[in-house]
Amino acid sequence: MTAISPEVTLPQRRVAHNPFAPLATLAARRFQLSVRTPRELVVPLLTPILFALVIAPALKQALHTSAAYEAFVATGTIGLLIPLNTMFAGLGVIVDRESGAQRELLAAPIPRSLLVLGNLAVAFAITALQVAVLIGAASARGIHFNATATGVVWFVAASALFTVGMYGVGETLASRIPRAEEYIARLPAIAIVPWFLAGSLFPISALPSVLEWFAKFLPLTHGLALVRYGLLGDSGGLHDIWSMHSATMMATLSLAVVAAFAAALTVIAIRVFNRSAVR
Amino acid sequence: MQPRSEPIPRVKQRAIDVRKLRKTYPGGVEAVKSIDFEVAAGEVFGLLGPNGAGKSTTIGMLTTTIAPTSGSARVAGFDVAGEPLAARSVSSVVFQDPVVDSALTGRRNLDIHGRLWRTDPTAVQSRVGELAETLGLAELLDRPVGSYSGGERRRLEIARALVSQPQVLFLDEPTVGLDPRIRHELLDVIGRLRDRNEITILLTTHYLDEAERLCDRIAIIHAGEIVALDTPGALLAGLGHELVELHVNGDAATALASLRTRGIAGDDAFTIGSTLTVPLHDRTAAHAISVIHDADLAASSISTRQPTLDDVYLQLTGARLADAA
Image (cartoon, rainbow over all chains, first blue to last red; front, side, top):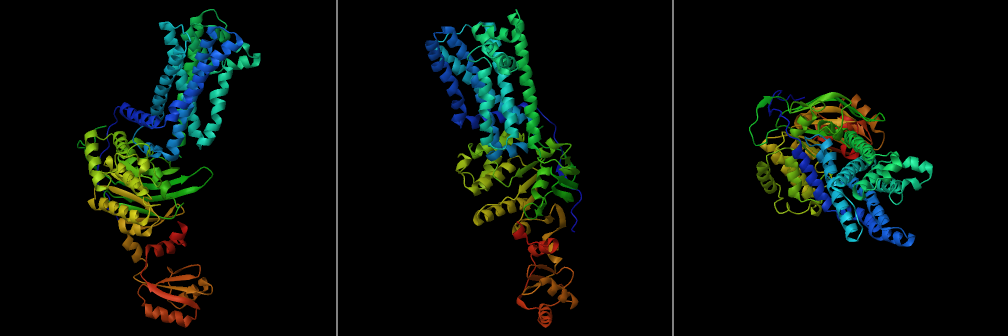
């Protein structure tokens, strides 16, 4: 065998620097890809808008309920919009892996957790925009919200943390499921079924006792109770879960549940992505 | 990390250093079996072998997308297991399949690479312009990559890999699936990179002509093991300057044994199916053909020719490269 020169000159290692610049690059990339796929922006919004603007008023008329019921359902649809949108965002991960630039990104000199966080940042921003559109459309339709400044803080915190947690669910599934078709097949069970059980169209106290007990463990139940507490000043959902007298205490407990959900799913999503990225 | 345009201190080391590197996938498939090789800076090193030989797994371990089971590998001195970010910061890879954001423009794909590799944005701009000219992409850069042809896309991927001015460039079967004209264009591009001698290239291929044309040295990899490693010339020289190839109607192994008995075939003669190949070394073709006629081997054809890398591969592995690929 021919010997090669044993020693050659090469540039030396470089020191690490601020990780936020690559994160911004990844988020900008994901945003550009998302806006080029309008279905990711529009489709998740359609069903909640339909519920808030058409079905809730129809139910109000048919069942002779009050205007408060329209607001109850309109806020409940936020609990459908967030899972739908974040799960659709998870599809982008599969597309990246199957026909996009994921392998190039995995070869980049950045921590791979930034790929998850960059996607999360965009899913979060788009979800926030869609929730704002939903509330705006409901208001324009004449649905009345009764939010105080403190209430808005509860609403924003609950919605934000629930969005983060649900994106973690989407990213985790996308990392473990090989094909988009299989991912979509699981979407109803994760994004829609819990919505019916979490007090979105009726209080969980109306459920059979076993299901009511089960619903109390769903992060969505806590999230929706907080959204209604924040936007409508209605602590009924929180009381159905905790049966306490202090609304603030119940809201704090439910926010802790949603925060734990968000933190756990983010950690899981990053770990699962890292494991699936390296064979 | 400093922008790429700033001067950086230099140390002495190999560009790639692989020691006892092994990969066993879950299920027990041994894709790479304790391989060793080293590549000097500025060298073009080829991993030649069929699909499934372990070439892409080796590149995957060097680019930190596949975790080695055991052994070590260093890229520009950085251990791929212990210092993966540093190893990735000095290298780029062109994958076997298209790995691009088709919805984005070519320019944006290049820009993202530059930013993620922390290259100075001003340097990226000028580098993109230079690469676009060199690779014939100037007119395409502002179009979505989805509208590119296969060859244009592959040229973009090569440009992207060069934006960050890597010290080590991994090319994983860069011409697979391309039509012959585009393939030759790309080989010219890689050849120009080679001539500039500024970059170390590890190239995997199962095309013999690519390996012979581009590589300073070649490792023939078969079933996860390196079975030969040398310059193309030295590998060919192992089979002498000429060989005899004959197709026999009977059993080729029996015919080979007969030629060995008569002193015409040495240990490096080999058979594949009904074809028997005999390196001549210091024997003359006329003498060899005369002996073959005397042996009455029922040969349907006899010819002489110069050895190729295919013969080297065949002699080492017992399988024709084009068939195995």
